[in-house]
Image (cartoon, rainbow, N blue to C red; front, side, top):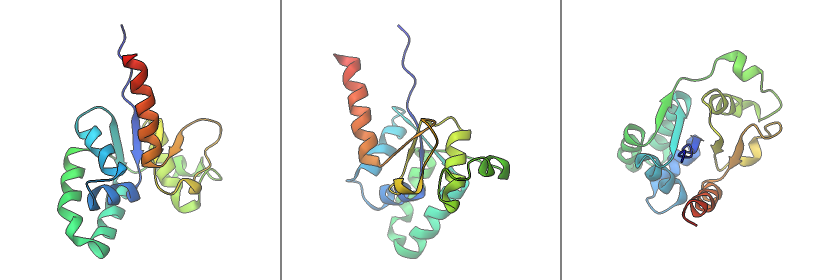
Length: 147
């Protein structure tokens, strides 16, 4: 029997910040699942820089947890090039196009963010979900494997 592929998620900076700030929320659970290799969480360099800057300015006490999560629970990829970003104009707010481009260029099926309203990908090229919504979807998928 062929093993199903692991879900591949692109994690936005807001999710990385939330996961670093609290061990109780869905964001932290996602990164724990990635650390356990149950799912794959992908971030771009831009996401890491943005999250670190915001934590340094607003929640410096969360920086050690952030650095540990970046080192152990996510795969860091290059930022997309300008042509990848330009090809997606109209499918996200201008400031978020690079996030969508990075997710798509790295084969992610999901973009996990608290800012779902910022994204309007055409057709079903990627699902844009909040962390809790993704966990519910994963739970449904896992339940089919054991029934």
